[in-house]
Length: 205
Image (cartoon, rainbow, N blue to C red; front, side, top):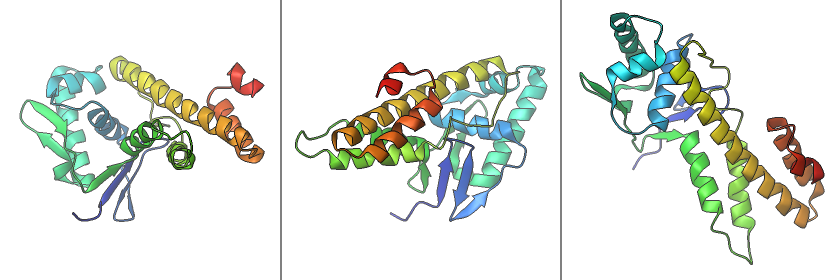
């Protein structure tokens, strides 16, 4: 199995890399939004549903045409193998040549839950790696409030990922405090308060 050739970052401002070369989507925010939706929503999606999701203010024919343009942009910039598309449906295709920060974020947090009572250092390292991946809110800088369905989905996903990051940071802060690593504990708590300034338990900690 070869090394991954494509890396997708969606936490924070979206950044894509192919073999250490940055991929720029220019101003096509909706192509980025579409790709993120397909990754976080596994399975086949009817084309007309995707068109309504991201082009709700357009007539159906125009929305379907805009969807085709976005799909072409995705294939052109990150390769045709990333999508499995038919005349009716579209799905994201996971391959070993692609790494995604969202998947790594989930995997690290899940793996850290199975810690040993005698040695938690490995799990703490995984948590630290997970919060390092959290560069900011999901699709930071991508706002499509005129598309109500997508906007509602994005706000829900952002809140979910932010809460996972806060939970990981809270566990890190408590561990560092137990270990008398006060500087690390303060760094973790300050990051929490950046994400949630009104979090009372963090202020107390």
